[in-house]
Image 1: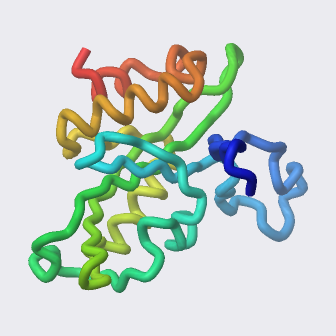
Image 2 (image 1 turned 45 degrees about the vertical axis):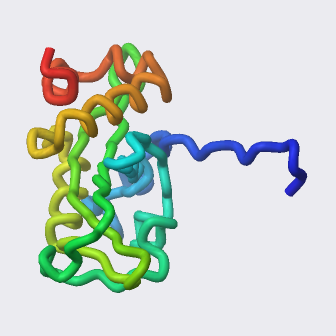
Length: 171
């Protein structure tokens, strides 16, 4: 890659057509991951970014780290929030329909981290079911996430629920 060119940031997954096309056969009723995106919030750096690799625990944050189920085993871990953002469409256009946040810590010096895989899977599922679960996030991280979502697409943000806006901005 040339020095002067910047890598284009990855955007949110956008809704495609119904993968089963209404046929009711094999795969009918299964969930589609086409409209969910993983957003990381770096708590210390106060920045947010999309990393699609997190869909399969292969994000840049997670690579090379052995995750332990006990937070106390990683006392110096750098804190992150992995936020599952689900996009849906209504008559006016697309919006942020489900937003759920999972805690994660990473200590690169010992190549260890903390995350609860069952919690991550359950919260991904809740995001796909259009739930907003952000109340356990720290206030700074909520603001960082809100700004990131607004900057990505103001229209998505404007069409989103009052519950999401209140949860992230305490409006």
